[in-house]
Image (cartoon, rainbow, N blue to C red; front, side, top):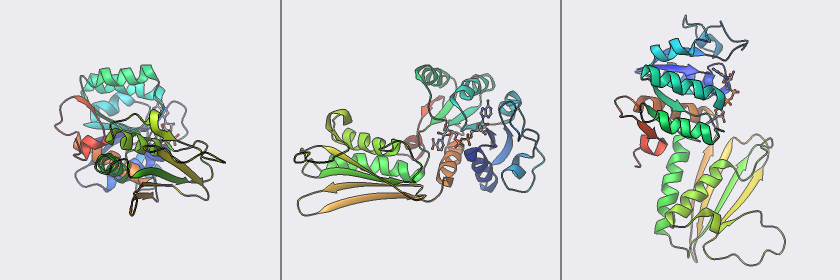
Length: 266
Ligand code: NAD
């Protein structure tokens, strides 16, 4: 399967080049960068720290889409718009990891998915997606006698809290109980907050060191506590999941899919 990487000189782009090269049955179709990027003209694989592959990092996204069965995009929302058009023109599947699309960007993705196969996820980690699916299931099985609390820890540089993944876990837990997270979310407890309300889903955030990302979902019952933890130690978990998604697109009908489809939870 021929896999192209747009934005191949980026942090994720380089890891994706490494993952494609290391994965049996996958062939690197090439890599692009945006205009003016200093990596243009360098060898795609050598720039990712591998032996040279003989293909230069190019600005020619059109040629890359024509040469690829599937293209993986971890770039910028503005770049994704062009990539969607090229994927449609060439019948190329797309794996979309880029975040921050506005309403128009999201609508364009949905429209393109009528013609081509797209896998889009805010978090491509296989383990985190398993945690989403199991959290939803457990929240349904363990009724609201089990208090749900979500704890996350990230490196000291992170500026937002709770993490997007923690909120995603809260949404999964709320969905499992058939409620909206907005109605039950309990954040930022400090001082005399009163007793915990039954059915609340609580969040706590820790920051420190260089922790890549840890998420624990706690179901605290009367006499027992179930905890489900995911710990990330490298951003390599995203490239591994994205290339798994890229391989999964082979032979799939046009449509908009996510990692839960790829992992067989849907
Ligand atoms: P980065 O800035 O290191 O890499 C982005 C690359 O895209 C850069 O090299 C940039 O030059 C390139 N680029 C910009 N315009 C381009 C164009 N027109 N054509 C080709 N390349 C272009 O950023 P990053 O940390 O690798 O993250 C990239 C994106 O992926 C972000 O949106 C980030 O939030 C997202 N991300 C998603 C996941 C996930 O699991 N979904 C995980 C990590 C990062």
